[in-house]
Length: 355
Length: 134
Image 1: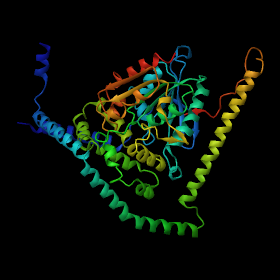
Image 2: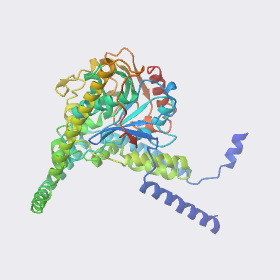
Image 3: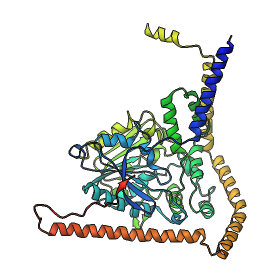
Image 4: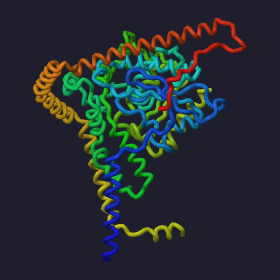
Protein backbone atom coordinates (compact mmCIF):
# COMPACT_ATOMS: atom_id res chain seq x y z
CA UNK A 1 0.00 0.00 0.00
CA UNK A 2 1.52 3.27 -1.07
CA UNK A 3 1.44 6.25 1.26
CA UNK A 4 0.47 9.71 -0.02
CA UNK A 5 4.13 10.76 0.37
CA UNK A 6 5.44 7.99 -1.89
CA UNK A 7 2.71 8.69 -4.46
CA UNK A 8 3.80 12.34 -4.51
CA UNK A 9 7.45 11.33 -4.90
CA UNK A 10 6.64 9.03 -7.78
CA UNK A 11 4.57 11.72 -9.49
CA UNK A 12 7.47 14.16 -9.22
CA UNK A 13 9.91 11.54 -10.52
CA UNK A 14 7.58 10.86 -13.44
CA UNK A 15 7.38 14.58 -14.24
CA UNK A 16 11.16 14.82 -14.16
CA UNK A 17 11.51 11.88 -16.54
CA UNK A 18 8.92 13.37 -18.86
CA UNK A 19 10.76 16.70 -18.92
CA UNK A 20 14.05 14.95 -19.77
CA UNK A 21 12.32 12.91 -22.48
CA UNK A 22 10.81 15.99 -24.14
CA UNK A 23 14.05 17.94 -23.83
CA UNK A 24 16.09 15.18 -25.48
CA UNK A 25 13.60 14.88 -28.32
CA UNK A 26 13.26 18.60 -28.95
CA UNK A 27 16.87 19.81 -28.66
CA UNK A 28 20.16 19.23 -30.45
CA UNK A 29 23.11 17.70 -28.64
CA UNK A 30 26.57 19.28 -28.73
CA UNK A 31 28.32 17.14 -31.30
CA UNK A 32 31.41 17.31 -33.56
CA UNK A 33 33.47 18.99 -30.84
CA UNK A 34 36.99 17.88 -31.82
CA UNK A 35 39.00 20.98 -32.85
CA UNK A 36 39.60 21.24 -36.57
CA UNK A 37 40.82 23.62 -39.27
CA UNK A 38 39.11 24.32 -42.56
CA UNK A 39 41.81 23.78 -45.17
CA UNK A 40 39.92 23.75 -48.47
CA UNK A 41 36.46 24.43 -49.87
CA UNK A 42 34.80 24.00 -53.25
CA UNK A 43 31.11 24.70 -53.74
CA UNK A 44 29.56 23.20 -50.58
CA UNK A 45 32.35 20.70 -50.05
CA UNK A 46 34.72 21.37 -47.18
CA UNK A 47 37.92 19.66 -46.18
CA UNK A 48 38.84 19.78 -42.51
CA UNK A 49 42.06 18.85 -40.80
CA UNK A 50 41.75 17.83 -37.16
CA UNK A 51 44.23 19.54 -34.88
CA UNK A 52 46.82 16.89 -33.96
CA UNK A 53 47.38 16.13 -30.30
CA UNK A 54 50.44 13.93 -30.79
CA UNK A 55 53.82 15.63 -31.49
CA UNK A 56 54.84 15.55 -35.18
CA UNK A 57 57.79 13.22 -34.55
CA UNK A 58 55.49 10.61 -32.98
CA UNK A 59 52.78 10.85 -35.61
CA UNK A 60 52.27 8.46 -38.53
CA UNK A 61 53.55 10.17 -41.69
CA UNK A 62 50.72 8.90 -43.93
CA UNK A 63 47.58 11.06 -43.50
CA UNK A 64 44.10 9.58 -43.23
CA UNK A 65 41.21 11.03 -45.24
CA UNK A 66 37.67 10.20 -44.08
CA UNK A 67 34.98 10.16 -46.77
CA UNK A 68 31.40 9.72 -45.62
CA UNK A 69 28.14 9.35 -47.56
CA UNK A 70 26.75 12.24 -49.61
CA UNK A 71 23.28 12.13 -48.05
CA UNK A 72 24.22 12.23 -44.35
CA UNK A 73 26.29 14.49 -42.16
CA UNK A 74 29.87 13.26 -41.68
CA UNK A 75 30.05 14.24 -38.02
CA UNK A 76 28.89 10.75 -37.09
CA UNK A 77 32.66 10.11 -37.21
CA UNK A 78 33.14 12.72 -34.49
CA UNK A 79 29.90 12.25 -32.62
CA UNK A 80 30.65 13.47 -29.10
CA UNK A 81 33.64 14.03 -26.85
CA UNK A 82 34.79 10.75 -25.33
CA UNK A 83 33.01 8.76 -28.01
CA UNK A 84 34.48 9.93 -31.30
CA UNK A 85 36.32 7.88 -33.92
CA UNK A 86 38.19 11.00 -35.02
CA UNK A 87 39.31 11.74 -31.47
CA UNK A 88 40.42 8.11 -31.09
CA UNK A 89 42.49 8.24 -34.28
CA UNK A 90 44.20 11.57 -33.62
CA UNK A 91 45.11 10.36 -30.12
CA UNK A 92 46.59 7.27 -31.78
CA UNK A 93 48.90 9.54 -33.78
CA UNK A 94 47.13 9.88 -37.11
CA UNK A 95 46.90 13.08 -39.15
CA UNK A 96 43.15 13.01 -39.83
CA UNK A 97 41.23 14.87 -42.54
CA UNK A 98 37.48 14.85 -43.05
CA UNK A 99 35.64 15.58 -46.28
CA UNK A 100 32.22 17.15 -45.74
CA UNK A 101 30.17 17.11 -48.96
CA UNK A 102 27.76 19.72 -47.63
CA UNK A 103 24.08 20.15 -48.33
CA UNK A 104 23.28 20.18 -52.06
CA UNK A 105 20.96 22.87 -53.33
CA UNK A 106 18.85 23.05 -56.47
CA UNK A 107 21.93 24.21 -58.38
CA UNK A 108 23.58 20.86 -57.57
CA UNK A 109 20.82 18.66 -58.97
CA UNK A 110 23.08 17.85 -61.94
CA UNK A 111 26.00 16.75 -59.76
CA UNK A 112 26.82 13.12 -60.50
CA UNK A 113 28.88 10.44 -58.82
CA UNK A 114 31.42 11.35 -61.53
CA UNK A 115 31.76 14.81 -60.04
CA UNK A 116 32.03 13.63 -56.44
CA UNK A 117 34.55 10.87 -57.22
CA UNK A 118 36.64 12.52 -59.93
CA UNK A 119 36.28 16.28 -59.46
CA UNK A 120 35.84 16.98 -55.76
CA UNK A 121 37.68 13.99 -54.28
CA UNK A 122 40.94 14.31 -56.29
CA UNK A 123 41.08 18.03 -55.51
CA UNK A 124 40.61 17.36 -51.81
CA UNK A 125 43.32 14.67 -51.98
CA UNK A 126 45.69 17.16 -53.62
CA UNK A 127 45.09 19.47 -50.68
CA UNK A 128 45.64 16.66 -48.15
CA UNK A 129 48.99 15.92 -49.80
CA UNK A 130 49.93 19.59 -49.83
CA UNK A 131 49.03 20.22 -46.20
CA UNK A 132 50.49 16.97 -44.86
CA UNK A 133 53.58 17.14 -47.06
CA UNK A 134 53.18 13.42 -47.81
CA UNK A 135 52.57 12.07 -51.31
CA UNK A 136 50.91 8.93 -49.98
CA UNK A 137 47.64 8.77 -48.06
CA UNK A 138 45.07 6.43 -46.57
CA UNK A 139 41.38 6.76 -47.30
CA UNK A 140 38.39 5.50 -45.34
CA UNK A 141 35.08 5.42 -47.22
CA UNK A 142 31.85 4.65 -45.42
CA UNK A 143 28.55 3.70 -47.12
CA UNK A 144 28.17 5.78 -50.32
CA UNK A 145 31.55 7.26 -49.41
CA UNK A 146 32.93 3.74 -49.93
CA UNK A 147 31.47 3.69 -53.46
CA UNK A 148 33.18 7.01 -54.23
CA UNK A 149 36.53 5.94 -52.78
CA UNK A 150 36.36 2.63 -54.66
CA UNK A 151 35.69 4.45 -57.94
CA UNK A 152 38.58 6.81 -57.26
CA UNK A 153 40.94 3.98 -56.28
CA UNK A 154 40.05 2.08 -59.46
CA UNK A 155 40.50 5.04 -61.81
CA UNK A 156 43.55 6.58 -60.10
CA UNK A 157 45.50 3.57 -58.76
CA UNK A 158 48.84 5.42 -59.04
CA UNK A 159 47.82 8.55 -57.18
CA UNK A 160 49.48 7.65 -53.89
CA UNK A 161 46.67 5.72 -52.22
CA UNK A 162 48.45 3.35 -49.85
CA UNK A 163 45.57 2.08 -47.69
CA UNK A 164 41.90 1.83 -48.55
CA UNK A 165 39.33 1.11 -45.84
CA UNK A 166 35.78 0.37 -46.90
CA UNK A 167 33.10 0.42 -44.22
CA UNK A 168 29.71 -1.17 -44.92
CA UNK A 169 30.32 -0.62 -48.62
CA UNK A 170 27.34 -1.16 -50.95
CA UNK A 171 29.27 -2.29 -54.04
CA UNK A 172 27.64 -5.53 -55.19
CA UNK A 173 23.91 -5.46 -55.99
CA UNK A 174 23.59 -8.95 -57.50
CA UNK A 175 21.77 -10.61 -54.57
CA UNK A 176 18.45 -8.79 -54.86
CA UNK A 177 16.66 -11.02 -52.36
CA UNK A 178 18.77 -9.77 -49.48
CA UNK A 179 18.93 -6.10 -50.47
CA UNK A 180 15.60 -4.55 -49.51
CA UNK A 181 16.45 -1.22 -51.14
CA UNK A 182 16.99 -3.06 -54.45
CA UNK A 183 13.48 -4.50 -54.17
CA UNK A 184 11.92 -1.13 -53.35
CA UNK A 185 13.69 0.67 -56.17
CA UNK A 186 12.89 -1.95 -58.79
CA UNK A 187 11.90 -0.23 -62.03
CA UNK A 188 8.48 -1.92 -61.96
CA UNK A 189 7.52 -0.05 -58.79
CA UNK A 190 9.75 2.97 -58.41
CA UNK A 191 9.86 5.85 -60.89
CA UNK A 192 13.07 7.70 -60.10
CA UNK A 193 12.49 10.26 -62.88
CA UNK A 194 9.12 11.25 -61.47
CA UNK A 195 10.64 11.97 -58.06
CA UNK A 196 13.50 13.99 -59.49
CA UNK A 197 11.11 15.90 -61.76
CA UNK A 198 9.12 16.86 -58.68
CA UNK A 199 11.95 17.69 -56.29
CA UNK A 200 15.16 18.13 -58.31
CA UNK A 201 17.19 16.43 -55.59
CA UNK A 202 16.14 13.39 -53.58
CA UNK A 203 14.69 14.89 -50.38
CA UNK A 204 16.48 14.00 -47.15
CA UNK A 205 13.17 13.15 -45.49
CA UNK A 206 12.47 10.46 -48.09
CA UNK A 207 15.95 8.99 -47.67
CA UNK A 208 15.44 9.01 -43.91
CA UNK A 209 12.06 7.31 -44.25
CA UNK A 210 13.64 4.62 -46.44
CA UNK A 211 16.37 3.91 -43.90
CA UNK A 212 13.94 3.79 -40.97
CA UNK A 213 11.33 1.73 -42.79
CA UNK A 214 13.80 -1.14 -43.18
CA UNK A 215 13.29 -1.86 -39.46
CA UNK A 216 10.09 0.02 -38.70
CA UNK A 217 9.39 -1.32 -35.20
CA UNK A 218 12.96 -0.76 -34.01
CA UNK A 219 13.22 2.74 -35.45
CA UNK A 220 9.74 4.07 -34.73
CA UNK A 221 8.89 2.34 -31.42
CA UNK A 222 11.71 0.43 -29.70
CA UNK A 223 14.15 3.30 -30.08
CA UNK A 224 11.93 5.62 -28.04
CA UNK A 225 10.94 3.26 -25.27
CA UNK A 226 14.62 2.38 -24.84
CA UNK A 227 15.22 6.05 -24.18
CA UNK A 228 12.31 6.11 -21.73
CA UNK A 229 13.65 3.06 -19.87
CA UNK A 230 17.10 4.65 -19.56
CA UNK A 231 16.14 8.18 -18.57
CA UNK A 232 17.77 7.72 -15.15
CA UNK A 233 21.10 6.89 -16.78
CA UNK A 234 22.75 10.19 -17.86
CA UNK A 235 25.38 8.46 -20.02
CA UNK A 236 22.75 6.50 -21.94
CA UNK A 237 20.66 9.65 -22.40
CA UNK A 238 23.70 11.59 -23.65
CA UNK A 239 24.52 8.86 -26.16
CA UNK A 240 20.92 8.65 -27.36
CA UNK A 241 20.66 12.43 -27.66
CA UNK A 242 23.82 12.69 -29.78
CA UNK A 243 22.73 9.87 -32.06
CA UNK A 244 19.24 11.30 -32.44
CA UNK A 245 20.73 14.67 -33.33
CA UNK A 246 22.66 13.04 -36.15
CA UNK A 247 19.80 10.81 -37.33
CA UNK A 248 17.36 13.72 -37.60
CA UNK A 249 19.80 16.00 -39.44
CA UNK A 250 18.80 14.93 -42.94
CA UNK A 251 20.17 16.36 -46.15
CA UNK A 252 19.00 15.79 -49.72
CA UNK A 253 21.01 13.84 -52.28
CA UNK A 254 21.97 15.48 -55.56
CA UNK A 255 19.43 14.36 -58.18
CA UNK A 256 21.85 13.13 -60.84
CA UNK A 257 23.92 11.18 -58.28
CA UNK A 258 20.74 9.59 -56.93
CA UNK A 259 19.68 8.59 -60.44
CA UNK A 260 23.06 6.92 -61.01
CA UNK A 261 22.88 5.14 -57.67
CA UNK A 262 19.48 3.65 -58.45
CA UNK A 263 19.80 2.98 -62.18
CA UNK A 264 23.48 2.12 -62.59
CA UNK A 265 24.16 0.44 -59.27
CA UNK A 266 20.94 -0.88 -57.68
CA UNK A 267 19.37 -1.98 -60.96
CA UNK A 268 22.30 -2.78 -63.28
CA UNK A 269 25.00 -3.63 -60.73
CA UNK A 270 27.29 -1.79 -63.14
CA UNK A 271 30.28 -1.46 -60.79
CA UNK A 272 30.71 -5.19 -60.20
CA UNK A 273 29.86 -5.93 -63.85
CA UNK A 274 32.72 -3.64 -64.92
CA UNK A 275 30.22 -1.54 -66.87
CA UNK A 276 30.21 1.64 -64.82
CA UNK A 277 31.55 4.62 -66.75
CA UNK A 278 32.78 7.60 -64.76
CA UNK A 279 33.97 10.66 -66.69
CA UNK A 280 34.04 8.45 -69.80
CA UNK A 281 36.36 5.96 -68.12
CA UNK A 282 35.37 2.39 -67.39
CA UNK A 283 35.69 1.63 -63.68
CA UNK A 284 37.63 -1.60 -63.29
CA UNK A 285 38.02 -2.55 -59.64
CA UNK A 286 40.82 -4.95 -60.54
CA UNK A 287 42.98 -1.83 -60.93
CA UNK A 288 42.89 -1.33 -57.16
CA UNK A 289 46.27 -2.23 -55.67
CA UNK A 290 46.16 -0.38 -52.36
CA UNK A 291 46.14 -2.33 -49.10
CA UNK A 292 42.48 -3.06 -48.48
CA UNK A 293 40.40 -3.54 -45.35
CA UNK A 294 36.66 -4.06 -45.70
CA UNK A 295 34.61 -3.78 -42.55
CA UNK A 296 31.29 -5.61 -42.71
CA UNK A 297 28.47 -5.27 -40.18
CA UNK A 298 26.80 -8.66 -39.91
CA UNK A 299 23.48 -7.15 -38.78
CA UNK A 300 23.37 -4.41 -41.40
CA UNK A 301 19.93 -3.95 -43.01
CA UNK A 302 20.98 -0.96 -45.13
CA UNK A 303 24.06 -2.58 -46.66
CA UNK A 304 23.73 -6.34 -46.07
CA UNK A 305 27.07 -8.21 -45.90
CA UNK A 306 26.50 -9.72 -49.36
CA UNK A 307 27.02 -6.26 -50.86
CA UNK A 308 30.53 -5.82 -49.44
CA UNK A 309 32.01 -9.30 -49.70
CA UNK A 310 32.70 -9.62 -53.44
CA UNK A 311 35.13 -6.71 -53.70
CA UNK A 312 37.94 -8.60 -51.97
CA UNK A 313 38.07 -11.21 -54.71
CA UNK A 314 38.05 -8.62 -57.47
CA UNK A 315 40.86 -6.24 -56.53
CA UNK A 316 44.56 -6.75 -57.30
CA UNK A 317 45.69 -5.81 -53.80
CA UNK A 318 48.01 -8.39 -52.27
CA UNK A 319 47.39 -7.14 -48.74
CA UNK A 320 43.65 -7.42 -48.15
CA UNK A 321 41.42 -8.35 -45.25
CA UNK A 322 37.75 -8.58 -44.35
CA UNK A 323 36.65 -7.79 -40.82
CA UNK A 324 33.19 -9.01 -39.85
CA UNK A 325 31.71 -7.41 -36.79
CA UNK A 326 28.30 -7.89 -35.15
CA UNK A 327 26.19 -4.73 -35.36
CA UNK A 328 24.30 -2.45 -37.68
CA UNK A 329 25.19 0.00 -40.42
CA UNK A 330 25.95 2.89 -38.08
CA UNK A 331 26.29 1.04 -34.77
CA UNK A 332 29.62 -0.59 -35.66
CA UNK A 333 31.27 2.84 -35.76
CA UNK A 334 29.10 4.95 -33.46
CA UNK A 335 27.59 2.37 -31.09
CA UNK A 336 28.49 1.96 -27.44
CA UNK A 337 30.98 -0.87 -28.09
CA UNK A 338 32.69 0.64 -31.18
CA UNK A 339 35.61 1.93 -29.10
CA UNK A 340 36.34 -1.63 -27.93
CA UNK A 341 35.84 -3.43 -31.25
CA UNK A 342 35.83 -1.62 -34.61
CA UNK A 343 38.03 1.38 -33.79
CA UNK A 344 40.96 -0.59 -32.30
CA UNK A 345 40.88 -3.03 -35.22
CA UNK A 346 41.02 -0.20 -37.77
CA UNK A 347 43.72 1.56 -35.75
CA UNK A 348 45.88 -1.57 -35.54
CA UNK A 349 45.45 -2.40 -39.22
CA UNK A 350 46.25 1.15 -40.29
CA UNK A 351 49.14 1.63 -37.86
CA UNK A 352 50.98 -1.33 -39.33
CA UNK A 353 50.62 0.18 -42.81
CA UNK A 354 51.18 3.89 -42.18
CA UNK A 355 54.91 4.04 -41.34
CA UNK B 1 27.77 -13.52 -0.72
CA UNK B 2 28.12 -10.02 -2.21
CA UNK B 3 25.75 -11.12 -4.99
CA UNK B 4 23.15 -12.07 -2.40
CA UNK B 5 23.48 -8.68 -0.73
CA UNK B 6 23.09 -7.04 -4.15
CA UNK B 7 19.99 -9.08 -4.87
CA UNK B 8 18.48 -8.12 -1.51
CA UNK B 9 19.25 -4.45 -2.07
CA UNK B 10 17.44 -4.41 -5.40
CA UNK B 11 13.94 -3.02 -4.83
CA UNK B 12 10.95 -4.94 -6.11
CA UNK B 13 9.81 -3.62 -9.45
CA UNK B 14 6.21 -4.64 -10.25
CA UNK B 15 6.64 -3.53 -13.88
CA UNK B 16 9.68 -5.68 -14.66
CA UNK B 17 7.67 -8.65 -15.87
CA UNK B 18 5.43 -6.36 -17.93
CA UNK B 19 8.53 -4.82 -19.53
CA UNK B 20 9.85 -8.30 -20.30
CA UNK B 21 6.59 -9.22 -22.01
CA UNK B 22 6.61 -5.94 -23.92
CA UNK B 23 10.19 -6.52 -25.15
CA UNK B 24 9.42 -10.06 -26.28
CA UNK B 25 6.27 -8.92 -28.09
CA UNK B 26 8.02 -6.05 -29.85
CA UNK B 27 10.90 -8.29 -30.86
CA UNK B 28 8.58 -10.77 -32.52
CA UNK B 29 6.63 -7.96 -34.22
CA UNK B 30 9.91 -6.42 -35.36
CA UNK B 31 11.00 -9.65 -37.07
CA UNK B 32 7.63 -9.96 -38.80
CA UNK B 33 7.78 -6.36 -39.99
CA UNK B 34 11.33 -6.71 -41.33
CA UNK B 35 10.11 -9.64 -43.42
CA UNK B 36 7.00 -7.73 -44.49
CA UNK B 37 8.89 -4.67 -45.76
CA UNK B 38 11.28 -6.92 -47.68
CA UNK B 39 8.42 -8.36 -49.77
CA UNK B 40 7.35 -7.71 -53.34
CA UNK B 41 3.87 -6.69 -52.21
CA UNK B 42 5.25 -4.00 -49.88
CA UNK B 43 7.51 -2.64 -52.64
CA UNK B 44 4.57 -2.63 -55.04
CA UNK B 45 2.23 -0.92 -52.55
CA UNK B 46 4.66 1.84 -51.52
CA UNK B 47 5.64 2.38 -55.15
CA UNK B 48 1.99 2.78 -56.12
CA UNK B 49 1.32 5.20 -53.23
CA UNK B 50 4.33 7.32 -54.12
CA UNK B 51 3.38 7.33 -57.78
CA UNK B 52 -0.17 8.40 -56.94
CA UNK B 53 1.01 11.18 -54.62
CA UNK B 54 3.43 12.56 -57.21
CA UNK B 55 0.88 12.35 -60.05
CA UNK B 56 -1.86 13.97 -57.98
CA UNK B 57 0.32 16.84 -56.82
CA UNK B 58 2.00 17.49 -60.20
CA UNK B 59 -0.70 19.77 -61.73
CA UNK B 60 -0.82 21.94 -58.57
CA UNK B 61 2.94 22.11 -58.35
CA UNK B 62 3.28 23.08 -62.00
CA UNK B 63 0.57 25.73 -61.73
CA UNK B 64 2.23 27.19 -58.64
CA UNK B 65 5.62 27.24 -60.35
CA UNK B 66 4.16 28.97 -63.43
CA UNK B 67 2.38 31.64 -61.44
CA UNK B 68 5.42 32.20 -59.22
CA UNK B 69 7.66 32.59 -62.28
CA UNK B 70 5.23 35.14 -63.77
CA UNK B 71 5.00 37.09 -60.52
CA UNK B 72 8.77 37.24 -60.09
CA UNK B 73 9.19 38.28 -63.71
CA UNK B 74 6.68 41.13 -63.29
CA UNK B 75 8.49 42.27 -60.15
CA UNK B 76 11.85 42.08 -61.98
CA UNK B 77 13.11 39.55 -59.44
CA UNK B 78 15.20 36.48 -60.24
CA UNK B 79 13.53 33.10 -60.04
CA UNK B 80 14.89 30.06 -58.18
CA UNK B 81 16.19 28.72 -61.50
CA UNK B 82 18.03 32.01 -62.17
CA UNK B 83 19.74 31.86 -58.78
CA UNK B 84 20.57 28.18 -59.28
CA UNK B 85 22.10 28.93 -62.70
CA UNK B 86 24.20 31.69 -61.15
CA UNK B 87 25.35 29.36 -58.37
CA UNK B 88 26.38 26.79 -60.98
CA UNK B 89 28.50 29.42 -62.70
CA UNK B 90 30.13 30.31 -59.38
CA UNK B 91 31.01 26.65 -58.87
CA UNK B 92 32.61 26.54 -62.32
CA UNK B 93 34.65 29.65 -61.49
CA UNK B 94 35.69 28.05 -58.19
CA UNK B 95 36.85 24.95 -60.05
CA UNK B 96 38.90 27.08 -62.44
CA UNK B 97 40.50 28.83 -59.47
CA UNK B 98 41.26 25.47 -57.86
CA UNK B 99 42.86 24.30 -61.12
CA UNK B 100 44.99 27.46 -61.16
CA UNK B 101 45.97 26.87 -57.56
CA UNK B 102 47.09 23.35 -58.47
CA UNK B 103 49.08 24.63 -61.46
CA UNK B 104 50.80 27.31 -59.37
CA UNK B 105 51.74 24.65 -56.83
CA UNK B 106 53.21 22.46 -59.55
CA UNK B 107 55.18 25.38 -61.03
CA UNK B 108 56.52 26.38 -57.62
CA UNK B 109 57.47 22.81 -56.82
CA UNK B 110 59.26 22.55 -60.17
CA UNK B 111 61.08 25.81 -59.54
CA UNK B 112 62.05 24.76 -56.05
CA UNK B 113 63.49 21.52 -57.40
CA UNK B 114 65.31 23.24 -60.27
CA UNK B 115 66.77 26.15 -58.28
CA UNK B 116 69.86 25.57 -56.12
CA UNK B 117 69.00 25.76 -52.43
CA UNK B 118 69.72 29.16 -50.82
CA UNK B 119 71.24 29.04 -47.36
CA UNK B 120 70.59 25.33 -47.42
CA UNK B 121 66.81 25.86 -47.65
CA UNK B 122 64.45 25.37 -50.58
CA UNK B 123 61.79 27.94 -51.48
CA UNK B 124 58.29 26.69 -50.77
CA UNK B 125 54.88 28.29 -51.08
CA UNK B 126 53.60 29.62 -47.76
CA UNK B 127 50.49 27.98 -46.34
CA UNK B 128 47.38 30.04 -47.01
CA UNK B 129 46.40 32.48 -44.33
CA UNK B 130 42.83 31.66 -45.26
CA UNK B 131 43.01 28.39 -43.37
CA UNK B 132 41.01 29.04 -40.30
CA UNK B 133 39.69 27.36 -37.27
CA UNK B 134 36.30 25.77 -37.92
